[in-house]
Image (cartoon, rainbow, N blue to C red; front, side, top):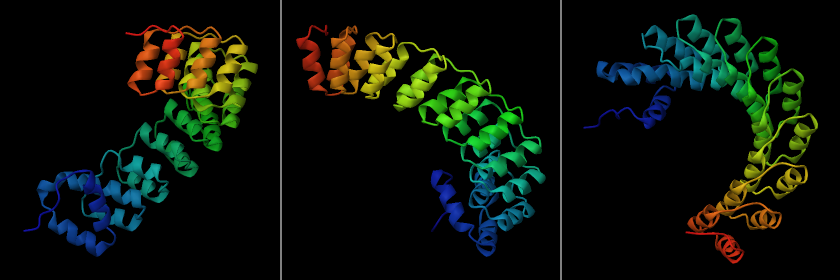
Length: 283
């Protein structure tokens, strides 16, 4: 005898498929027993994801409960009409709603949530910066949304120089990790901008440049006085970046047994050979 699937990740796919129209939904509602409370609590979220307002209205009339993430999912997918209905009919929301609207570039959704009292936090600006949504960042900042160093870090790592410039000009804080994040993403122009504007750096810039294979950035950092240490050679070797390992060592960067160990563990024999032949300790 066929049985309803147990609640799982596949349940969401099943619900989405079953709820394509009201007749299917009505049958589904009659068929699922009270023991399927977990099903019920996921229905509204799946409808909000699909953006079917009439179906969401039906679900609410039938007494299906809101889940804690109905508004969050509606905001994530830019389903403004579903978000409005859910909020106006008692669905809870929190900072995740604004964060998901900002992260996915839905300005109208963010505006509605904020104007109707939904809380937001630093993640709203941070996620807008990460994904390159300048207008959303402007709206959030102009309406007193808090931000922190993660806004500049995310802009730097993901190559959004217009966002980084805006944030800096408006007083958003940055620190050594901002340069480090530019190095992670390999964004040379951004690193130059940061340094020209006085952003500090430390050994993490060289470490991240080496780890991610960005030789040009590593050279720039060293030629302009950025410090480095064993982490630079270690992570170059760990990820098989032979030219970076060679450059670092030939220019006086320290190394230790972690360099050979990580190179060997990850199968980078060229790095292992070079390190061993040039006196790197190993265990």
